[in-house]
Amino acid sequence: MPRFQREFVVEHAAGLHARPAALFVRTASQFESQLRLANLAHEPSDVDAKSILEVLTAGVESGQRIRITADGDDAEAALDALGELITSNFETPPPGVPKT
Image (cartoon, rainbow, N blue to C red; front, top):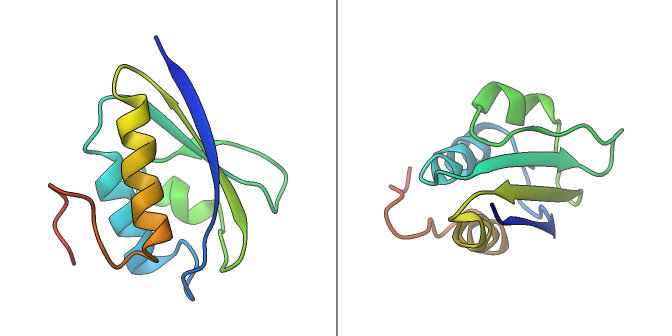
């Protein structure tokens, strides 16, 4: 099973809280791969990227670096979609993900 990881800086003013976190989890949930999120500004501990509660507990603030790890057949596609979401500053959801 393929395993990939990428790092991103979250620039959204709210960080990965409220609406951005919900959109992140909705996007992650579109994929079959196991997705983990680590806030690299804190003691690294991976959380389930498909769980809103776990993503919120990661405490990602604006300007902090995160690492997303993906395991599965659609791992690269999942990282591409989440990367697009983050780099668009949560303004453009990937195809198939409704905008809130």
